[in-house]
Amino acid sequence: MNTNTVRELIIPAGLETERFLLGAGALQRVPELLKSLFPGKRPWIIGDDNTWEAAGKKLYQILEDAGLAPLPPYLFPGEPELHGDDKYIPELAELMQESLVPVAVGGGTINDLVKRASFVAGIRYLCIPTACSVDGFTSYGAALLKDGFKQTLPCPAPLGIAADTEVLNHAPSKMFASGYADLAAKIPAGADWIIADELGIEPIREDVWELVQKDLRAWLEAPENQEGIFLGLAATGYSMQLYRESRPASGTEHLFAHALEMEGLHASHGFKVALGTLAATAMYEWLFRQTPDEIKSKMPAPRSAAERANEVKELLKAGCYGENTAQIAMGKHPEPEECTARREQILEHWDQLKKRTKERLIPFDTLREMFRHTGAPSCCADLGITQEHAEHTILVAQLIRNRYTITDVLDDLGLLREAAKYAAERIAK
Ligand SMILES: [Zn+2]
Image: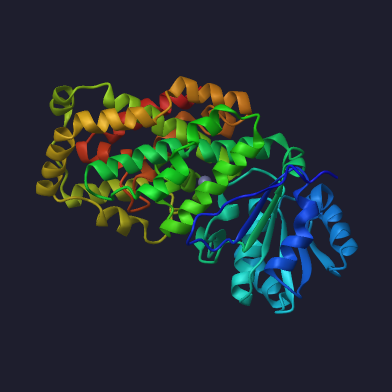
């Protein structure tokens, strides 16, 4: 196998990941990676029946040939689909001894399970992605179901990564579409950060911004280049490692996806995010095609805390959105005077908000074409939800997290319901 096409990527300073190989034939370089990062330790492959076929078996042979004496692999069943659940962690962590190095061979779920279990066991691990499916390969933290809710549990990123494009290219196309959408989500997420920056709520940190946003459009415009998409997802993971928060990679569209997730909707992370990305984009377009005078003429009087509490209660009545959500929602509710001041600030910054977010966003129709082209969901029906459901989800997305986004701008202006209705109509079919 020719491994000349494998590149050693330069990792920004200050990260938990030390080495990252990317390219066709990267699997062949895993022994070298292990020797440099984990001298004297025996590799232990963790995957599932599918990822074993896709890369695990071959890697096992490579490790054996290199004299690294791999331990027998730990394989989850390939069917039914494995879910990232904290319940698997105690057993996995128990099996992780100081003398071995866990080698996660798989997509986002396997990686998250191994990431968290290694942390619990107090050791580091190596990541071998088998699909460009999420941005979590290089990020800090693991998204796992715990106590009934998906949470990001703390744990360091892998010490090393070897992404073999020959493996990635053979992954199911749905997984690629999912990763593509997770990368496209950084467009509205970036616009949300611009808003928070412009209004002095959360300033943009330039080095982190650049990592994600600088080449983002180029990556998205070349979906046939899996290496580019993987680089984009990796850069996003780095940005979260550096920022210690998901702000650089997640805005309205991720909150929309989280709300669907809490309702128990079965679809990949990226697929839920895809619909959220379209919904967020539609709301930006709706808001900024109006003039400040038009907005002013529509704004209702600010709500009292009691009125808001009733609304929140009604929106969360399904009871599946987490114990503290009503509290979070009320915690960010501005008193009428604060709300008036915020409205004035938004209207004062209108031109800048409009200009800066427009420069970053991809128009709704273009974005939808990009999703259709890659096989990501482009309307509610693709996820099996109704227009009304999507509209409700947008309203819930505004409640669940204290992170200022387009939904908060709209809510401060008293126009979120109208915008949500419009966005849901646009993504309905
Ligand atoms: Zn994501």
